[in-house]
Image 1 (tube, rainbow, N blue to C red):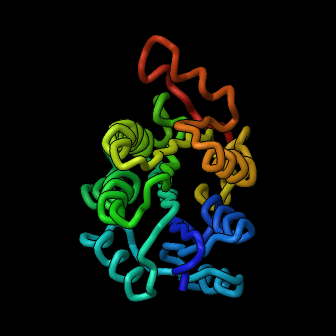
Image 2 (image 1 turned 180 degrees about the vertical axis):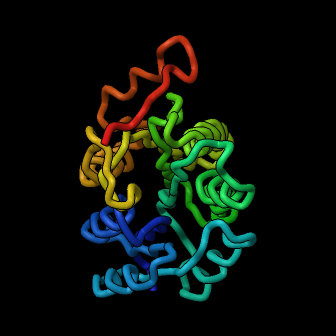
Length: 239
């Protein structure tokens, strides 16, 4: 299973951007392994050809090693693309967030993608790609989602350094910075000005094809990276 084809693993595959990426990669003749917690949604995707899934909670200790074991049990020994897409936010002031909430948020948004990349890096061949779906929130102060913005800033920092570390193995790191996206991430209360998940998936897949180091969705979001002060300004979502 997945031995003779190009293989891709996508976290956060059960909905939103991740689900679209899975479908687009399959259309491009990849064998795709989706990782997520929603078994019902992943089971629906299993009707597609060249797809398998792993049920996993990325906030749990040892999850990266368990995902590797699951891949080996399925006969997958090579990953041409690893897409770290999973993430979630807590819409509360920091003083109202519990230790458990903060730990889970940082584990899913920051620690899991780094440890998963580390655990699977020897399965990625030269010329392979590791994608981090970060966020434009890495460059602004998201007043409504303070811990999420902090986590994405941390992931940005780590991805920049992983890019340098993986360069010696000729593995490409691609960093994706979308503005807010209209997905179930928002629990049916989607902010004004949100972009479509299709737009993000299209830009991400083009970046993979062209080996781009970083892409912003929409392109003008890149401007916040070059403004003189960080975080550049306070940003509040409008509903």
